[in-house]
Image 1 (cartoon, helix red, strand yellow):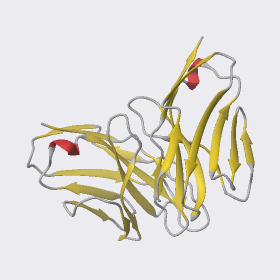
Image 2 (image 1 turned 135 degrees about the vertical axis):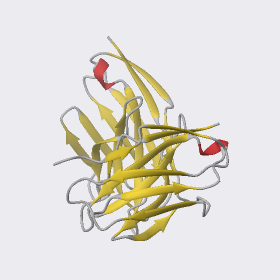
Image 3 (image 1 turned 30 degrees about the vertical axis):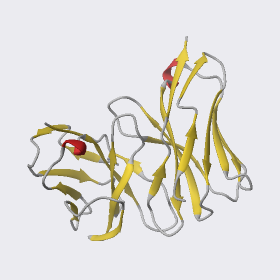
Image 4 (image 1 turned 135 degrees about the horizontal axis):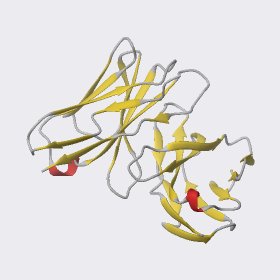
Amino acid sequence: ETGVTQSPTHLIKTRGQQVTLRCSSQSGHNTVSWYQQALGQGPQFIFQYYREEENGRGNFPPRFSGLQFPNYSSELNVNALELDDSALYLCASSSSGLTYEQYFGPGTRLTVT
Amino acid sequence: QQQVKQSPQSLIVQKGGISIINCAYENTAFDYFPWYQQFPGKGPALLIAIRPDVSEKKEGRFTISFNKSAKQFSLHIMDSQPGDSATYFCAARLDSSYKLIFGSGTRLLVRP
């Protein structure tokens, strides 16, 4: 059984650019959540995808968008990057039903200059 | 109120000692309370979790104590080891979604 994987590991972008981050969920999990973790802070919920539909969104602007594919992998897209978008982006997968556990990937470190 | 307040911000414990981290919440709609351990450059790893119908849960050296009436829960690490040095986050889940709300984290240092 493979865990949650994310790519790329690190990324450097310039303000105003667009970025796509990728996540493969743990085997058997059909729900993917994305979180932003600024340095020295706890993760902040961005949104969640369940069966290819957005299933809840945190307090993030529309330039943060996502996709989930039939194999339950997911993408996070951020347009018009701002300096404050520099953070560790975490993907967590879970299975629907009675289990609440969310398992996180290693994250993608995004630096916006 | 969808906040989880965590304390202390940092903690130094001697090897073999007990590490205690506390969290408090206001929203009674929270129905699941996990603790995560995060090492530098890594994603958070699920350590232990509890539901509000249970007052205590123990897994190895890690124990969660839950006080529903006070809306507080805590993580106790018994016989703390240098390898436990990491940042610990408490979190809470709203019963209507899978969204986790995290505390601000506690940086634990266990001295040899």
